Amino acid sequence: MDNSHGGDSQTGDRKMVPVIWYEGCRGSWCHAIVDHLTDHTGFEHLMEFPEEGAHRAVVIIKADQHKDMDALNSQLRNFGKVVLIVTANEEGTFDCDKIKNAYKVWLQTPAPHQVADRYLPWGWTPQCQRPRWPPQKHLDFYFAGQVTHARRRDCVTAMRKMLETRDGVLITTEGFAKGVDFQTYFGLMRSSRFALCPSGPVTVDSFRVCEALEQFCVPILDYRSPTGRYANYWHRVFDIMPGIPEVEEWMDLVPRAGEFIEQWPVASQHSQSWWVRYKHMVRAQLWEDLCSE
Image (cartoon, rainbow, N blue to C red; front, side):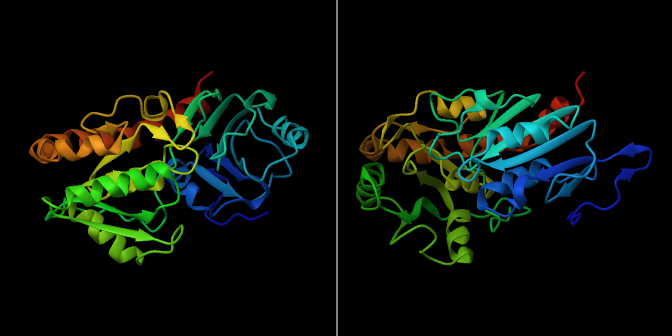
């Protein structure tokens, strides 16, 4: 049993809640937001199920690797109350209805047909470090990423048109994480007022959304994926998002670029106030799910 990051099994008179990374799955980029949820002295991180169960537990699995639901349900039965967090759900193939022994199921990047108790976005990558203070902004718009489908191509076309009259940086890359180094990537994001966040290959979400918020940059969200409209996605994972714009067609952004820049001070203030509250809220929700009777 791996007790790294865990420490003693008790804090004072209170037992620590085990956070079990099923089959040692910890370490993917999509886990940065889960680490945020469980970065607390009341949790003990384990890389396998303990020999004895516990009254409460958090179990984390990867949807793109997990196959044996019967084995998982059998393990969950050893705990009084389990919050199951399903990560890496980009393809939207995980069947939450097959989970029989979890009190609550949290699902990352839900597809339109999937239903769970709570939802999580992709979050931010582990390399993303939030500045202590709001940085100075000298760029209007920023996008750096791979261009592999129609939504990305439309975004890049709109961005090139805006750069004829606006300050910004556009960097197209050959593949995922194959562009500029992380220091340059986040440095440019910190210097920008808005970050264009076109859809991923399946879900409208991408790491870029939360990374922009972490860097005091306002993300511009995609309302559609290459497979069609992802109805209600942003409301499901974030509820209310004040100050954060969405687009259905990227070229519609071009004539509104000046309007966006004028509105940026208010949009930035509202989005950042909400973002800080959101991160506190999801941590509180996890404790609520674990401790409610």
